[in-house]
Length: 197
Image 1 (cartoon, rainbow, N blue to C red):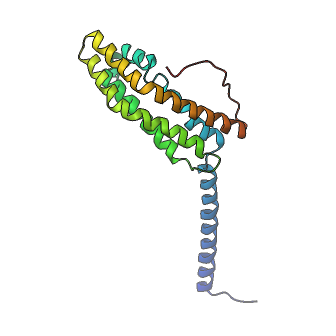
Image 2 (cartoon, rainbow, N blue to C red; image 1 turned 60 degrees about the vertical axis):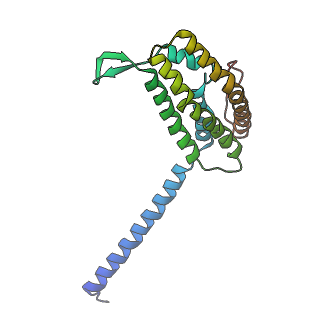
Image 3 (cartoon, one colour; image 1 turned 60 degrees about the horizontal axis):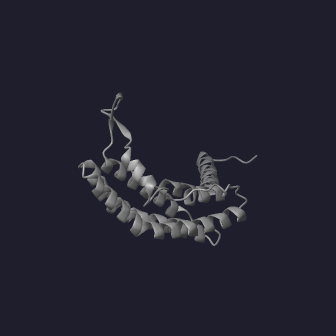
């Protein structure tokens, strides 16, 4: 019978603990990698479906949103509601779009996802400056009760200037989205007849 000294037993336990800890770290890192790599549906959702938040850009949709402002709670009281200013509405839209673009850009670009991600990001890069500038100006016209013809004229100038480019980008992203969905077996009903306007 071999006698093990208390010091040897300590080192054995310490060494075994190191191995267990190392095994836990390695397995948790594999789990983290598996969970953090997005599946095709996630790519499709962030790149294609989230672009629906821009539906109405440079067209009647955004104008309708500004015509009928959402309400907000005053002092956190659900019984005390007030209309949002148009500036608040545009600010909220910008924050949402910037957050979505950040998520989109956080996805790993691969040969399979490159066209889709780039086409989707191009739309965000196109519309965000317009929301931050022209739509802020339009919001100011609403919030200061500018004459109706000034609001209509400015809104029409946004549409004339930006809608054609926006439509081209949406069509490019839709083409990339269809190819990606087909390749990855994502079932989508593309036959719904809507216009970004």
